[in-house]
Image 1 (tube, one colour):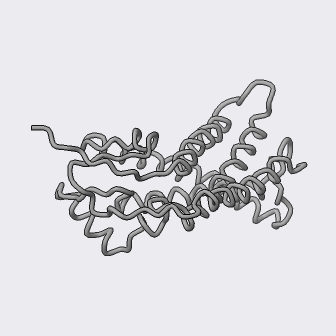
Image 2 (tube, rainbow, N blue to C red; image 1 turned 135 degrees about the vertical axis):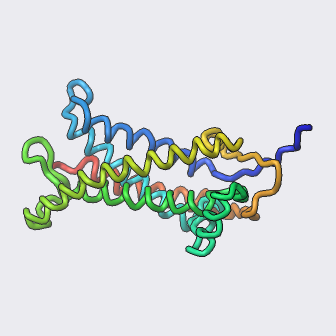
Length: 230
C-alpha cells in the first residue's frame, strides 16, 4: 500500500540559487589550486575571483538567514545542544524524526560550512603570492601574521574538504532513507509520508524587497573586490 506523500515548500528560490552558485564557485576555487587552471588565465586570478564571488554569496546568505523566508532563517534550523543531543541519540536508534528544514545535525553542518567558507574567503583577502596576486587587504597585517594566515588558509582548505565530504555523506544517508535532498534543492519541495516535526507557517511579507536589498549589498562588496586593482 502506497502512502500519500505530503509536499512542503521549504527552500525558496534565493536559497536554491545561493546553494548552486556556491557549489560552482567552491568547485572552481578548488580546481584552480589543484590544476594549471583555465587556459590563458592565471589560476591564482581565477581562484581569487571565485573567492570574491563566495564572499558575496556568503554575505547574501547571512542577511537572508536573518530576514529571509521562514525555512531560510537560521532561527528555524539551528538548535541548541539539548535538542541536537536528543536528535543524535534518536538517529543512532534509527528513530530520528523527519524535519522539513535541516535537522539539528544538518543545521550545525550548515553553520560549520558557512564559518569555514567565510574564514577561507576572508583570509584570502590578506594574502599575496608575491608574483601574480595581492589581496585587496594585503599589507594591513604584519608579514609574519600574513604568513601564519596563509598556513591557516591552506589548513582550512583541508578542513573544508572534510566538511564537504561529511555533507555529501549526509545527502547519501538521507537518500537511502527515501529523502531526496538534491531534488529538494532544485525544486524547493520536500515530500513526506507524515507531517515533519518542524512544520511552520511561512511568511512572505516584503521578502522580495529584503532579497533585493541583500543582493545589492552582496553584489556591491563582491564587485569592489572583483575589480580591485591589485
